[in-house]
Length: 241
Image (cartoon, rainbow, N blue to C red; front, side):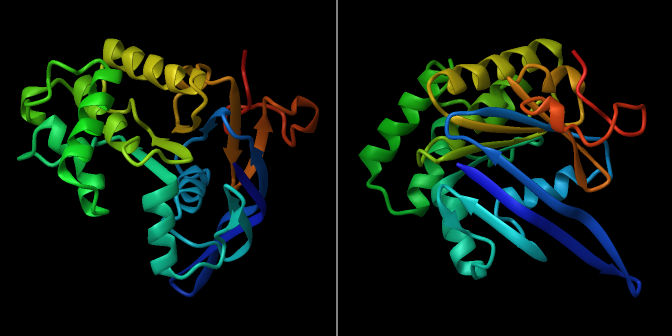
């Protein structure tokens, strides 16, 4: 589903070249649930932007669902983002004046889906995430955990190939965190490809596979323990049982 080959991203800041991501190669299979973990400045956010087609690499290749998206135009990247990737963000990103049902239906409205079909889809997805009785509630009338479940339902509206969750529990309390992580696990069991970005080892351990990023490179990958490039240390995270 996801394959990167030598993915590199550099930036020029105040006349100096900064390498945020350095020749990252990884493969995430269809239906896999993987957590990408790393502290601030490790490169995980840059990797998330590249995997989500929010940015283009400086060099290397990125194949998403068999399509090489490394060199697509901004317009083509926008199409891929809309059709192939479902995003779940830390801050929910729900429109405050819309109901839960309307928020979930919004991606379908933007791609021209007829009214009845998009509302039927929104209701089905909200029932799937346990919010079938909250269809008419606005975000202000929902708890943080409920808002995040609405965001997950919205991310699934166009049946994307990959669900990309960027710090989805960062604004939640312990109970809401557990609820959202259980929902991601359920989606994985149904065959969804889930990629979770987090700085929290406890959250990452809920995923069957953990990929640690440090200094712009893959520091460890629980799927390939023999290939671990660096030993775990306080400033270079590894995979801990």
